[in-house]
Image (cartoon, rainbow, N blue to C red; front, side, top):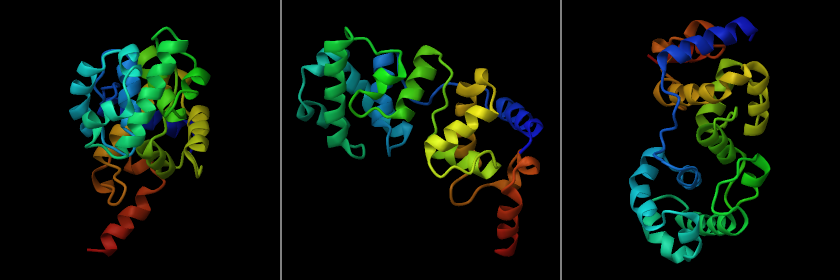
Length: 217
């Protein structure tokens, strides 16, 4: 895809999805970090249902770090992989309390050294909590970027690098949210709504999906 098409797509996405905030509910960097760790293999809506009680009981790294995973589990047991997540939350809270004065570090390397925190989670925190340019490649961003022809990467990191080359640096964080929302609302995994998509004329995958849809009628 040529740069003009990238600019066109970004302009249309920005107009269609003016919100550039994560769907996760949070008030502090610690809350965002916890919510993002919990969101793995779980929807943001499900996470938002459990975090109010979780944050009320464990409001700071110091408080959560003194708990055991078994103390945390009842608050998140409706989420997938909740036992592993409880262990990670207690571990990262202890690290934050002991090594960072209870503050979430603003450096990627430090964030990714915390239990349960990978590159995507670190990118979400850096972009949303601290305003740093970052692109977090989740399943939606991965799918939409490849369908647009912006990347042929077979793993999230490769797709992230490709997007960083194509998208202007100051748009990395908002573009991440635009792609997520487009993946949720239009570019679905199984049945993308290409016939209704405002990117149909510039998407390299739309003709194939439209052909499949017409042949299946």
